[in-house]
Length: 494
Image (cartoon, one colour):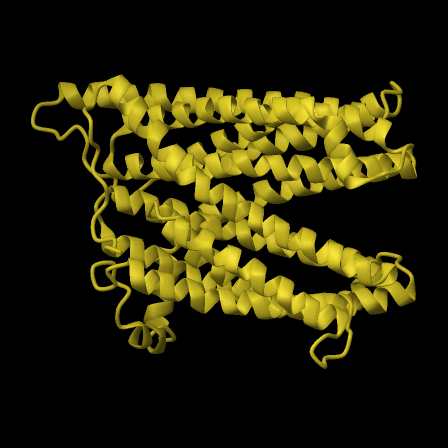
């Protein structure tokens, strides 16, 4: 396999049609492995739940309650690390390979630091659960699982940082292959540690947690090997790793690190905030579903899992769109930035609509895969249909946000996201589901409306920035002796 040594240059002409064809092909090429990889990450959690659930119901409760503490930390860390992909794709488009390597180096201390902070907080899992009013036995068992999973947080964030570095270079296949292999390792480790095979003691939920720790820490060196094979280390400034580590603790080195990481800190904070807003908003819908009754809560949980699975399609397209926008932005080709953004949105609308239609038409079959309870299926089927209707818009807003972040737009997309899902969705879903008596469908109807508002606002933002870019291009074109598309070495953010 040839190492990555230079960014791909535009081919096939600069006409609108040629640009659309190029971006469509590249988004399709990148999306496939990213969708598979992200689905594999979700599948790992599903497999853990199934295998622990088959061992013991109480152990499943320990595992489930642990996610209340671990999941927000993980979401925050993963969101922050997404800034690495933006910085890498922008530098790659600008043909600044050393800057790609610097973006990776700058991301690793944040991965380790955030992971260690999360690990320390996880040591207090049992007291936190007790403070949240959980039963003492649940808090004790869940706290033990939380403490073990905390050991995996630094590795999880390091693995994400390494994987998104390759994503930013347009090489997502390696990460996909490694996460698929990680799934195999995780299933085997679960089989050994949950059930007590091969002479080991049966550990239930703690066994699953230890399997996660082992799998995540194995993923890090695996990704390092992928980078070593795929990347020209000297050209990207990834050689002399040991000397970089040993010289990183001087006062001057730390000051330089803080200065140079400003862009990634700002964008990473915006990523993390946006992901937390949406995560907590949908957790609130879980509470609303619980108010409706136990059957409605169970039906909501199943429908939300279906939505999460089909959302992986849009997330893959969103990440691919962000890469294409970032590369175009790095070149300083702002027309290409706009075209890549709109192509990504159109590509998602078509792909997500097809997936949504298939899900809606097969809602009864899908519901039957999750449960045989005849009282639940009539509740699940209508909301699975609504999930199929929702995905083009929910997926569309994440594509639009990724496109904006690909050009370095940080906090305005986050603010629009928070407005749509915090200010609009939370009261609207409550009003539809409870006072208006729409019940469980009302939760998803409100989420659809919020998603339509979100994608509309983000598209308005893209259009506004595109018009501003066009005005700047016209002014540069009118100024003699100025280069129209100078590579954007220093990407600004809103």
